[in-house]
Amino acid sequence: CTHFLSWTWGYKVSTVRGALQQWLDGMVDGTRAEEVFFFMCFFVNNQYRILVNHEKIGAADLERVFEENLKRIGKVVAVLDSWDSPRYLTRIWTIFEQVVAIKLNVPVTMVLPADASRSCLDEFENGKAGILRVKNSLTKVDSQSAEAFAPEDEAAVKDLIKKTIPGGFEEVDKKIIHFMIRWVGDQMEMHMRSLVTTGGETQSTQGSFTVFGGEVEVEVTPSAQLSLPRSLRDLSLL
Image 1 (cartoon, rainbow, N blue to C red):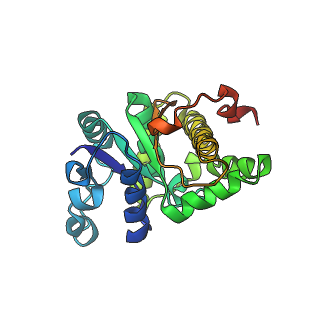
Image 2 (cartoon, rainbow, N blue to C red):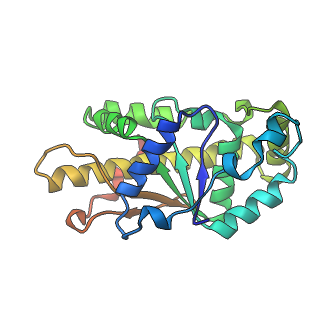
């Protein structure tokens, strides 16, 4: 596998497919679809044994297995269903995946389906008020109240957080919020670059929004290589 896919149950197939198409369209390093192989739990875990035979495969030995897979694969693509109250940030599995990736310094690329991406850019067009709406929506993180499909999985993951992460749920929330603030700032910067290079016409920003342990690395097309003030990305001050 070349990438670990972070997603959550409840997504439509069209949501996952659309987000991954956006991600692939935004690649600037020449990566082709046939060169990408995702580790996706739905296909890797035996769903018949889990759902029909009720075998406890979910959170058992979670820390070792998940960290080994994440370090082996080395890249995460995280699918957000929306910027407006995303389901992604209410599920304990995806929150846990994010915080472990941050801890291991594994790069995480956040992606949205096309409609959600356009809606996010429309909010940016509304100026400070729109930017703050996006930021506030994506920083509503409460890991202690997050849920999982299986109650035993929820309990196991939360127990693991309490035992292995100094500061527990509060620290997890801080890390995820910081991560999302930097990602929103990066999205806004890319959109502004697009506006500048297209003479004021709004276009869908295509690029890779990758975060390494909380630090943002931006990949853009050569025509958009402009330097913007760093303060545009420091949304934690807003």
